Length: 215
Image 1: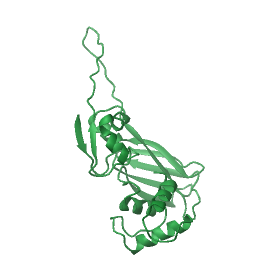
Image 2: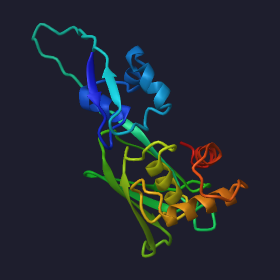
Image 3: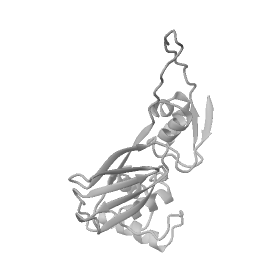
Image 4: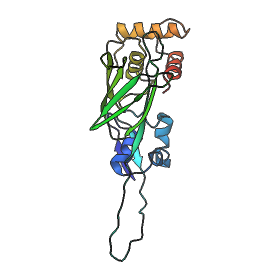
């Protein structure tokens, strides 16, 4: 059994690719990771410093012909990137062309009817660029830098700040400091959800944030 300390950008899918496991769930569901599962109910949302135990891999045998030659194809580990794109009024940017640059790959497509993007990406990818084209000639463009695996859990201060920013409730920083802009963002978010309009990081806030953001 091998122990790994999670670094920024790690998730079970990226660890599976890095250490040669076919399925990331074989890591996450291993008995040795029961404590991790209780702490992190989403295997794609790990926190820097988390401990992950890698199970022993079982050797696999294969027949070969008398020439002694064999061809082996190793499938690359992939994971799914999913996001929802809306305007500042909460209306979906539906059926808009998009482009995602990851490493040496460019993925093109259209957002669906609710403004959603859902594509498979290399599990080892750490960064990328997302572009949404608002017109047919691709002159009016929205661009976001992407950091895969870098989103902390929703019930951490940094994780809450990142989600608030992504939802359009502005926080001036995502460093885990409760400054005035973060307090204002929390209050605005709570008001939008019919909660008590204060800036307390309470259970009602975290539950609503998880429900609206999705993870």
